[in-house]
Image (cartoon, rainbow, N blue to C red; front, side, top):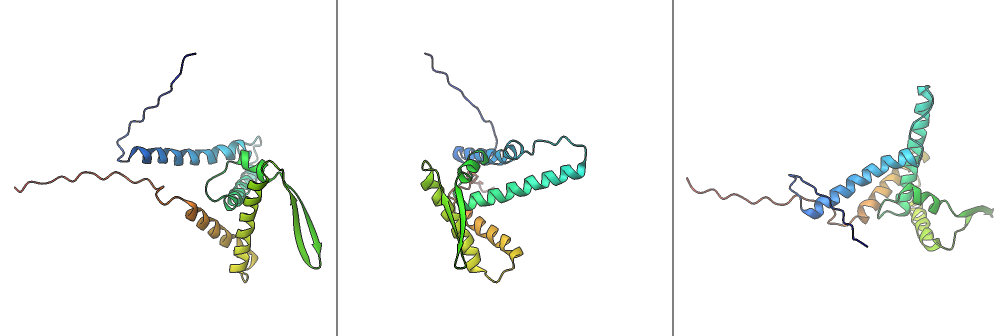
Length: 180
């Protein structure tokens, strides 16, 4: 059996190290994945009606749901992005039941044993984020709690990033000028 090799050549005049160029490429792909998910996973691939008002309403609803889902998933797993095609079945696979007794509400959930520990840790992260917002700003009206939660999620993402992940250009050699 013959071995097959695939090569790719990148020609650029950018002043970045090879590792930095690789990270820039991965970041670009992450951005493209977002649009691919919107079209293919969330149904933003086009509408069959000529009614622009209904098209706008549908597109905005999809964008809003996608935005909220991304916030939920990043709160659950702030270290990296999870694609909708894998995160939705994983995080929506549990069965839950809300019980109320003596003025307290309790959510009982049953998770699949295969990914139970991982999902449990992610749900704990979500609960901690919600508890943080409620504890740090109980006086906020409900309309202001969402921006507080978004700030918390962004802080979690920033704190989870490796400290050296930002690509930096290589230093250019300095030219020594001879006295004239």
